[in-house]
Length: 586
Image (cartoon, rainbow, N blue to C red):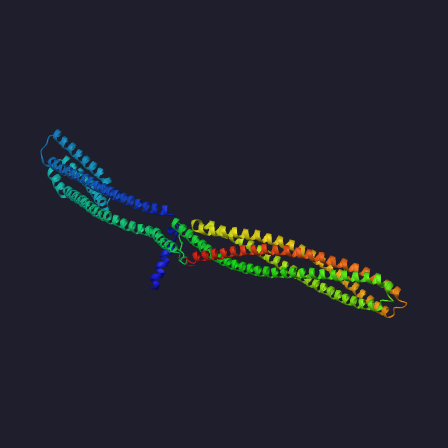
């Protein structure tokens, strides 16, 4: 199994160059291989057919020519033998003898011509050797014949015949034997050539039968390889696309080892899977962040609503304190007017001091009691002023908290707007699948803009409220100063009344001091009236500012309620988005 795995790995590694080809080149390569093999088959068939044809033609031609030339030479030699025997044995005339000699010479020339024509065809060593022997025997025969002619010319025909029979005949027999062997060799050579070409034809037939089968098998293997290289990645990609259609983003990436169109498509599919997976994760994280931000914003708005309720209660308390302060101021004015009336009475009765000492003492005691009441009222006014000041300070702190909350809401709305913008961009990248996300992001952005506008209004109201509270604090500080001055004046009046009592007890000699004290009391009472009236005016201003603050808080509460509704809607949208994203398995 390990050996098979290594072989498969090595085979795949060797075919990487083929997998990296474009599909166009793969198909053309298959066609080119088929064309090359077919052309090779045609060329081989034509080549071997032509070779067989040429060989057989050469065999027949050479064999026929060789046999003809040898037979011609053999026939000429036989005829020349007959002519020579006739010259030796027959009684011939001179003319006849001369003709036979000429005929013998012609036959010899024809024999040499035939042998010369056969010589280029004698390519085999056997033929060359035999031809050389034929030539030697022919030359030897020529020499022997010349000897025979010499003997004949001497008139010894019997000796010439005996010599011819004993010597020349052997040469002629040898020549005939050699020529017969050459004829047999040429015939056998032609038969061998024909047999060889027949065997070649058989081999060519087998080759022409087996080679197309091999080409067909090879073409089938290459076609299967090309089909597998194209179809297998497409099948894997189709299965992954079906998984993606079912919402499964955990599919295995396609191994894109090739560089052809299928490999490039697989790489693009893997990139699309990564992008889609990142988009879904980012949308999921964004929806979670939006939900958390919406919940945080909802909590903040609830805190703001509670804070606005506390501010409303505080402003109501300020209003109640202001009303009480106004009542106390009215009572103080009445008391001071009474004091002023008593002082006038004392002034009128100053001339009757001696006679009315007892009555003056009683009146002085009443004045002390009235002054004590005035001191208590002034102390109440001072305490009320401190309470109002503390309440306004708390109101200022609450306004600062409202401003902080408004700034926090503004930051959240800006972050929500940025998240909505990012969600819209990612939805636009997702195309048709992200259209729902784009609508949700647009609604989130609108709600964030409304929240931002409302927060701006709250901030503006808080700024106005802070200015009014600052003015109120300044006014309360001034009122506190005036109240303290009034207390000092009333204390001075108390001291004066004590002096009156002493002077009443010492009636004699202190009427002038009483008159002076009465004048001081009159001036102090006038200052008290002015201070109390100023406190009344400040109390009225405080009441008006408290009313304005209450109206602003009511508007702020309404805005907080609207933000609360928007946050609730944003939370619902984020939950819907999370539900949609949960359909994807990542």
